[in-house]
Amino acid sequence: MFGFRKDKTSPEPEVPEAPADKPGLFKRLKQQLSRTSSSLTGGLANVFLGKREVDDELLEEIENTLLMADIGLNATNRITQGLSERVAKQRIGHTKGMIQALRDEMHSILSPRQQSLNIPDSDTPFVILVVGVNGMGKTTTIGKLAKRLQAEGKSVMLAAGDTFRAAAIEQLQTWGERNQIPVVAQHSGADSASVIYDAFAAARAKGIDVLLADTAGRLHTQSNLMQELSKIRRVIGKLDENAPHEVLLVLDAGTGQNALAQTKQFDEAVSLSGVALTKMDGTAKGGIIFAIANQFDIPIRFIGIGEGIDDLRDFDAEEFIDALFSDTQDTE
Image (cartoon, rainbow, N blue to C red; front, top):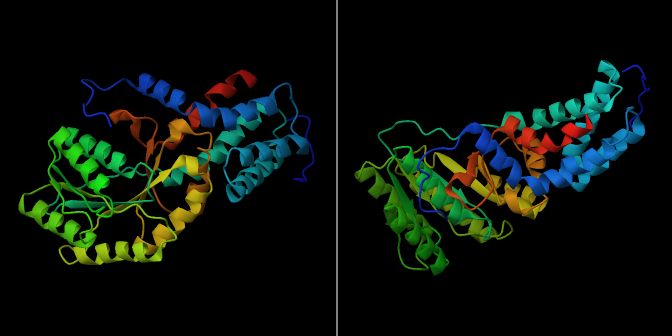
C-alpha cells in the first residue's frame, strides 16, 4: 500500500533519397514500439478506463502494470514512489492528472540518459569498440552505423575483431563491400586485439575519421573472453591513450531483465560509454530501457526499431515517451 490520504478535490544498403519529415518519423516510431506500448500503456489504459478517482488501489494497479511491462522492480518502485509524492503534494484526484504525472516520472528516468554520440573533428580516428553477446544485433548495428556516418560525410573503416566466427568476418566484409567501406580482417582464430590494432594503424595512416571495431560476441559470464576485451582496450591504447573513444554495448530489448546483468559485466570489463538497445520493434519487453536507465549512469545512444537503415535511431526520451503514451489519450 502507498499510504496517502485521498483528496477527492484533486541490413538495408541504401540511404533514403530524402529524410522523412518529423511527423513521419514519429509515426514510424509509434508503429514499431506497438508491442511495448501495448504491454505498458495498453495495460495502463485498462487501469484508467472508467476510473476517475485516484486512490491506493489505482496506484497498486499501476505498479503491477509496470512490473508486467518488464520495467523492473527498482525503476517501478521509483516511479510509484514519485507518483505517491505527487498525489500528496499536487492533490491529484483524477486520472488525467495521473497520466501526466506518470509520464513525468518516466521521463525523469530516461532524460538524463539521452545523449547522442558526437564525433569531434580530430587528426586521429575516432574508435568505436562495439561489444555484446551473440545474437544481440551487434554486427548489423555496426553496418547501419557505418552507413549512417558515411552519409554524414565521414570516412569509415571497419575492423573484423570477431575472429571466433568466420561467419562474423564474412558478414562484416559483406557490409563493407555493399557500402564501399574498407574492412581490416584476418583469418578466423586470429588474435582479436592484433586485428583491431592493425585496423587502427591503417585508419590513422589513411586519415579515416571513424573506426568501427567489431568484437567476438560472448556471454557476459565467460571471464576469459571478457578479459580479452580488456586486452583490446590496452593494446589500442598504445596508439592513442584515449582510445577507444566510445565503447558501445549492443543489447537486445527482448532479453528483458537479463540485459541488466550483461550491462553490469561489460561495464566492469571495459567501462562502457554508451548503449544501443536493438529489436525494440519485436518485443513487448521494451520497458527494460527504464530499468537500464535507472540502474546505470551510461548514455543510451541508439534504439533499433526495425531492419531499415533509418531504424537505428538516436534515442530521444521525450519522443519515446510520446510514442508509448499516444494510445492513452482516449482515457484522459
